[in-house]
Length: 70
Length: 459
Image (cartoon, rainbow over all chains, first blue to last red; front, side):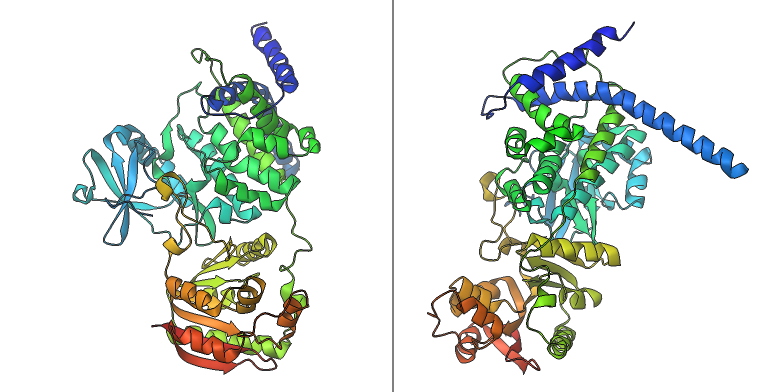
């Protein structure tokens, strides 16, 4: 499958992040990279959820139109 | 707050342009470097869509001769915001509405091929009772595959303080006063209770986000080739929207939010006091009034209903929350409720102590109302009358102030837990001291009380 490699990476990354403990971030430390990475992971997960949500909205809209015709 | 050149001291980070004042008017200069983005904002229909939904501040383009510095592409004159407020002065629902406004703007921007490059809470101001985005230069062209550069800032400025207020304590919103670029996510994560990890949106956007920052802090990223689909982008914004919408805070059992129901005033006294405030306001008709110790805004509404721009300050976040929700419910556009501890008002902070203005720096107001406040300042906070009068004379031209004598039941309550060292706390000393700073125009005793209401003018 085309996306299988990327799809496997996401849960692995989430698992790694859960195991890391959070401590203070100071001067030379750049929080931007971590934000960039988590954003890509989240977008990967949420794209499917968002697509499902959109389809679901279309389906319910279609059904309500169908029912209102009757 | 303005720097010497007329440019706002808070407006220096963005190379796209800056804000400046000239002869009392506020302008925004657009740099040539921002030309492409500005043209797209104006020509794509995004500007009209956002202004039409009252999400973005309206502006007019003025001639290039208004430019304050070289390199101007356009000079804009935005609609004036009568009073600039900051996130650490907002109640929970104000911050929440500001967050949802930012996300709605981001969603609309994507529809028109643009995206926000900032997720700062300082880009939102309250105008006519509603949150509105004021940074017209925050929009950049969206290219399929790019990530949301404002994601971290949004989480720090909005999601973290809202989650902390909702899950831990409303007073944690004051952390925004210390952390001007939003609450660091590792700090938010450590302060939030374990149960917040059971909500997926908070687990991911706050806790895992903080851990990701920590893990990748000293790693050099390879950002080439990584793309975020538009669906992923929309899913991310949608998830943040759902996260913010689910965060709730219900004020209960605080000291002030149910003050009028519980305390001292008879109906006759309350009505007479309202009538006096109405008549004092009528006699001076100020453009802007600050109501200090406004509680839930009962007397602010008298000013607001007369079309006066009214800033309704109180120390209690619950009272301010109630005030704001009532304003929204009634569609009031003249009242801005804000959280303020008068004994420690908002200072000038940020770079050069100039980025965010102090309370005093945002004055003076045409008028100040200080109703049922003097005893809290003089007795609870040991402030001599002279210090109170000096402060008030520095922030207003006219003053409506209520004197509450020692014999009043509310003062007796304050004195019941402390030694009475306030020998000078009497009406005569009050009048004598305030007369050094103000001319007393009217003094009327409030019916069915021992209190008196004064109208004064600054000397």
